[in-house]
Amino acid sequence: MRGCKYGTHRVVGENVLPQPAKKISNDMNIYDNEILIDVQALNIDSASFTQIEEECNHDVEKIKAKILEIVEEKGKMQNPVTGSGGMLIGTIEKIGSDLEGKIDLKVGDKIATLVSLSLTPLKIEEIVDIKSDIDRVEIEGKAILFESGIYAKLPTDMEETLALAALDVAGAPAQTQKLVKEGQSVLILGAAGKSGMLCCYEARKKAGKTGKVIGLVINKEQADFIKENDLVDEAIIVDAQNPNAVLNKVLEVNDGKEVDLSINCVNVSNTEMSTILPVRDGGIVYFFSMATAFTKAALGAEGVGKDVDMIIGNGYTKGHADVTLTALRESETLRNIFKKLYV
Image (cartoon, rainbow, N blue to C red):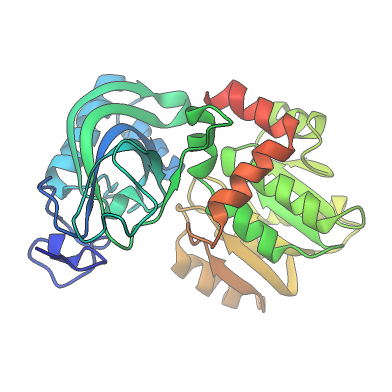
C-alpha cells in the first residue's frame, strides 16, 4: 500500500500535514513508499530541549518522562510549547518496495535525518541516556522517513557524533553562505552556540577582509572564547532580550553604523527586536532560532519603522549538509571545538 509522499496518511483525525498535526500514527509497519529506521539517538533542537529541561528543573528522570509522554501522546517528538523537534541518527532497517533501488540508500546504511522530529513518526522503546550538555537523547526505538524526507549518509572521515552535531543545525550556515556578501557587516546573536559558531565561520569567509562579523554573547567567557578562536571580528557582551542595549553595543563596534545583516541563533524567547533594531533599512534579518515569535517580529519591525527583509529559518537549504560538513573539514579550529563540546 502506498501513502502520500508528504506523510498525510499518518495524520490522525485532521486534514493537515504531519508537522502541524496534533497526533500522527507511529505504527511501525511501513507503507510501500516509506523507510524504516532503527534509531540510536535523537538530537532535540536547542529551544525545545532548553524548555523541557527548565520545566523539569534539570531532573534527568523527569526529562525522560516528559519526552516519553510527548511521543506517546503525539506519535512524534514535537515539543508542545515550542512546536519544534530536532533530528535523529539511525540505521536503515527496511525500505518500502516502491523506493527500493530508486534511492541511494540500502539496508544497513547509517543516516542522519534532515527533516524535523516534529513530523517524523517515532516509537521509543527505551531512553538509554540523556546527554543534557549537548541536547542528545540516546534511545532504543524506531522511526519512519516519508518519501519526501531528506537525509544525509553519515560521512566516513569523521566521528558520527561530530557529523550529527553539525548536521543538526545545517540550515543555518548554508543559509548564511547564501546571504552574506563581500564587505558586509554581520551581527550573529548567540555566536558561541553550535549554529552560531558555524554561521560565524561562513559569514567571515563570505564577508572577507573588508567585512565585519560581530558576535553577540551573554558573558565574558563566551566573548573570550569566540575571539580567541578567531570566529568573529568583534565580540559584544549584551543581553539579547534588551534591544536598546544591543543596538548601542553594535553601533559602538561598527563605527556608529547599523549592520547589513543579522542572524538570530539564540535559544531563548523575546529576542526579535534585538535582531531587527541594529539592521539598516534595506538590510536582511534571518531568524534561525525556533524560539522566534514571528508576529512579534513583523509588528515590531513595523513599530520602529524598519524596512528590512525578514527570513524565516528554513532548516532545509539545498546542499546544506555538504556546506556544513565542508566547514568542519576546512576549519581545524571548528572541528576541534565541536569534538571537544559535542563528541
